[in-house]
Length: 163
Image (tube, rainbow, N blue to C red; front, top):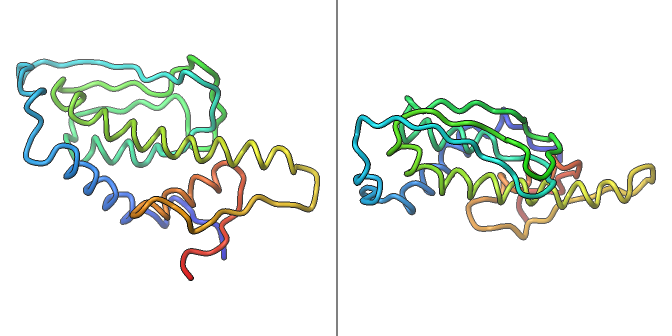
């Protein structure tokens, strides 16, 4: 099977994010309602550990679906190796939207970067040999394609999608 490409995942990303926001936000974020609607804010997201970045498109989709006025300024891209305390991206926009979206956005980024980072660790070990790192179908329900994409970002290969 050829490796998953980000360009092939657009509909899947949008659906993943829609489900995540529905689960997390539901009918509204009552905590964010405490912030005045006109308040603007900025945020910088950093990593605490060395990692391989994966999931930028999911983060973008979270804020695009919540509020297109939020600007996401990436300092890294999928596949980049980031070092501890490195800025990954900056956010600007309505404070309510930043607060409402941050949990879902970071959940995607942390999960997929974790998968990519682990795949890269194993890919580094077998580099220069004929061995290769291949993924599994044992993934989180609803996130199989996302996790398989993260494996490829980390230098692994996709085995197959289904039985």
